[in-house]
Amino acid sequence: KAGVTQTPRYLIKTRGQQVTLSCSPISGHRSVSWYQQTPGQGLQFLFEYFSETQRNKGNFPGRFSGRQFSNSRSEMNVSTLELGDSALYLCASSSSGGPWETQYFGPGTRLLVL
Amino acid sequence: DAKTTQPPSMDCAEGRAANLPCNHSTISGNEYVYWYRQIHSQGPQYIIHGLKNNETNEMASLIITEDRKSSTLILPHATLRDTAVYYCIVSRINSNSGYALNFGKGTSLLVTP
Image 1: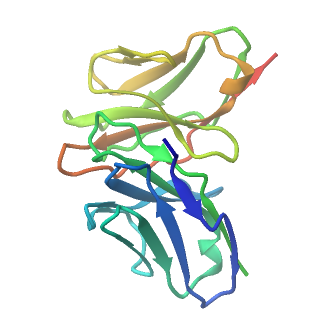
Image 2: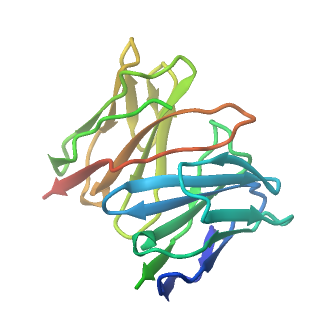
């Protein structure tokens, strides 16, 4: 079974631009979560989608948004990029997001904002 | 969700048991304790989770104190490949609410030859 894939793997943007990151979950998984990882803050939860609905949201500004499609693929968008948005963005999937399940993480998209 | 406190770094000799502590003194009765690890440049990997009983799987053992205010992850025979950042997470999750895990900064474990 193929793992979680994320595209692109690396991205360079300038301040004020917007960016869209993509995540394809493991086949059959319906829960997709997004995380931001920085050296200063560690690994922080952004949001989780299940069956095309945002089910949980972390403490991030409204510039961070996402969506999930009917095939469970998910996209994350960051508008009006700031230097502090430079980070590794990780996507994870699980079957339904229950406590008995393992989350499987993708390799991440490394975003650099100049 | 309850906050956790972990030491920023630990060392362990190869072949010895690695005992990673986690304090979660504000944990609620319906919150689980999760452990993940992240090997450099890879996504986090699930290790184990528990509610109040001790748990063991092929990777590790999880010991939760009776008052549930702290836990210890035990890697019984650490190898060099266990060098990673280990995250202890406490989260209230039910079958309808899904995941909202905040990993924080974790403990950087260095296994030495």
